[in-house]
Length: 192
Image (tube, rainbow, N blue to C red; front, side, top):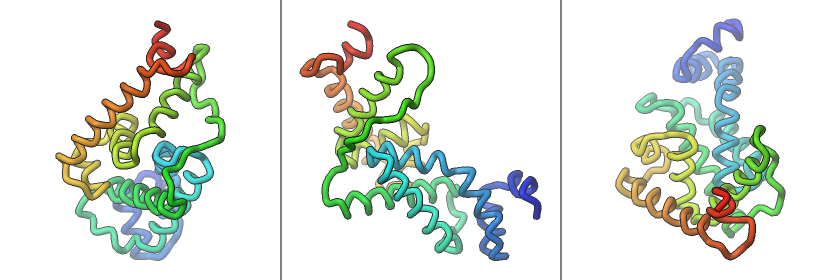
């Protein structure tokens, strides 16, 4: 099948095509479709580019090896986000510490002056959350996932997801409001 035709297929149809034929073209289209989302989520969970790239690669290998285990009981993206969070957890365990990046974030926003600095402040605040809060906050607030999708992706009950998001948001508010350091916090973001 031509790549153009494959790009019109649903995620689930691409998985089925890969599993049934062994042709890697459907898998390449599928992973290309979701690569940025996987990397972005891993980056926000792990806090640095190198670990996020490792997690993305781990997810791709897992999809390649375990595509036949996808049961089509949920959306492919739910399964993919579950693999992503698992890969991030594995990398975190291997490092046996909560990752704290030392690199400078790239300029992820173009536009008005100071916007990338604001983004850096928020990214740093996210890194200060415990992973059990950071993961669902990233999925909900940055990826727009529903509580049920997050519950399926993380293997946690929806009530637990809601409480972790609430605690994470509360903690973010505290971190962003902390006037300890000049140039950071809510005052820095609002200009007050």
